[in-house]
Image 1: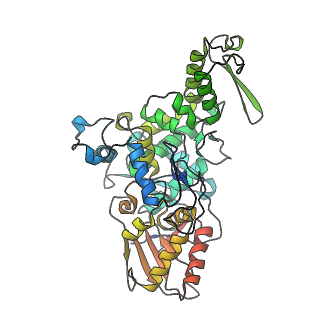
Image 2 (image 1 turned 120 degrees about the vertical axis):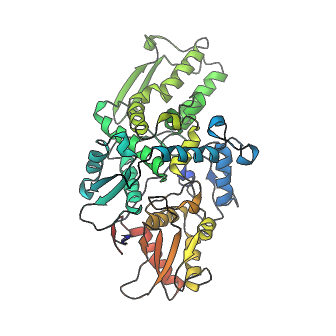
Length: 470
């Protein structure tokens, strides 16, 4: 069978920094050893900082506990559908979700959907396909191909497609999202959304739903408030902290202190974006009503609701329309917003030890082989963003699900462990080659660690997403 091969070319790939993922990108980490952080990580949920010798695994374990509010699977009895609640452990809920999605999946033997994509018109051709599909079509296997490129999609091309789609959707050129004013890097809807962007937001919702349906972790740096809208979580003043930290702090101060000589506000909100001024009334004649100590509670409640719900309602409605066309709303109602984000976006950091523990070797390669040892030494010396791009190079995706490297699969759910296979090193085989459909890396038998490092770093920096045939 042919396999997709990611080619080493000169077009550089830059992925947008993400929210959960950028627990690291949010707090840029510079280190010599990947597993010991010389800077600090910031938990995107409780905002706790991790410094000194915190390890990747320690940080990941904290995220899982934080998401479950301290609950672990060991502290709960076995859950079934009958007693599944929002309080159930995350791993129980995610397994239940997988089982439910399997029930509505249409087997590939019955029918699949072919998506032929033009690279020069990537978004347009992708949207033309996705927006014409029925909900049933979205539950079928996607066979993605790029026009003029050879390749059989056993999962690698689909993962590449998700990567390119999410990169494009969050690009400045599309103007679909803007950076929030939060401590952590995330995106929210811009001001003044109207029906002209409806297709783009519905399309994004369908892409998010399909990624969750296929258990492909994607870079989706949306604000946690948006995830709350998807799951139906109650939204309150505290959530404003993840959209606008300055405004949140101001409203908290207003709530806890006298404001007569400090704040001079009315029940009108004025916002500026791209040189335009937008004015909104929080209540009738709000521009004529001053905020005082007597009415500040009402103002805080209306302002928080406005910022977290009303101002983004058009975009939210379009996004939910697309998402629920793939994932029925009841299936995510058991999840908290943090759990849904983890299910969709996967782990925020890559654990090298977990990678080693779930790697197979072919030919003369083994864990003890000299060249393999050099490879892991180089990987351990890389910054997290480089490791993410290496993962992208070999699997077609820069992220992993909650199960880490043990979760690597083909598009049909068959196990596909990361594998390193030796190839001869000569002038025709200078760089590593990646077979993304089966998560395999062809590694030249380099004569020295220095040459191996140069070859690996080169493909990480300069590879373009694209496929050929083995």
